[in-house]
Length: 211
Length: 211
DNA sequence: AGCGCAATACCACTTTCGTGGTATTCTCGC
DNA sequence: GCGAGAATACCACGAAAGTGGTATTGCGCT
Image: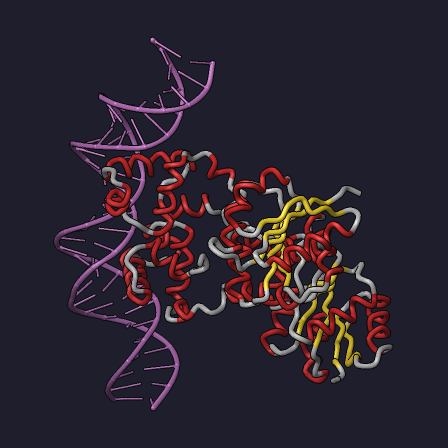
């Protein structure tokens, strides 16, 4: 069993020292370095050669999330576990987008923290089930709460599908057995309802998933 | 502590009986009903008034995923936990889209199954960390595995961003401090590399995530 | 019976996009 | 130092997309 090299990025002295002690107390784990802020971590983490990084989400200066976004680019093989007390969906989602693979709340018992590290190292994504729920809720929300789409008639939504696939007006007319002028009219109406004036804008608005 | 009412939808007789016995063996849990297929569950589950449903993903006839999609509409307050041996990303994602909140693999020990039920009942999303990883990878996948994008030069990728946001050539030219003709040229090159001939096609090809 | 809405259709006009050329400058690697 | 590739720039032409009208048909609701 390979020893897992861990680094801790945490501004709170007591917590940081506690984590370091915890990690070093067990065979199979070593705390390669600790940093009190994101900036230090960014310049120095290369030397630590970490498998797993525990990153506090609240750091002075550069936030933990942004720190991970930055580090993930430079060291994509390291697994980043966010540590936080907050569980609001925004924060979780931003951290995941940034490249974090795990999410620990501060109330997690020491034993579970070590489990989480192992887990992340072995290709898992440690997180408690309440956080998991928020993540998947976020998922399920994507295609549903499209108040924008509901404004469109069935036919308009159908045509929007073709728009999304890149069909030309001419092609849609052929496929739908209607005149190109009608296609044009439908699309014009779609744009009006969505308050846009180009195909790409319409698609971005209709399938507003990114962000 | 309220008793959790559970139903089991599972075609394999032995597994179904095992689960039923397991659930009834513990105080605080009761197996309100079991069904051998999706169709039976759909017509009869209303009477069971279940808090949690364990649903096999492989059912004869209507699949477990489709079954959940159907049931979730009718009984949105029930928590659906998928049971499966498969862990491929597609299946996981489809089940989540359908409205499942948890995901158990068949190898899960009995004790953990009961934990998962409790978890789902209490608003969590039970799943092992490897499944969690797949879920969040799916999240992060948007901008990563794009072999197509690597063909493009840095400048071209930059311009692709603007294309995606729906900017006109004129606007891009202004923002990038280059002539509209250069913008046109870059985009032409992008289309050539991606072998497409319209903005929408280029975007679909470049960000081919939504299948 | 009459109203509203969705779907259909046509026209005229402007703007934007996509295609096919050519050409210059700069940088990077060999 | 020379060639390849990238970024810049310009032109001309045709195709596609978007704008702003008007008009007819049919369906459902009151």
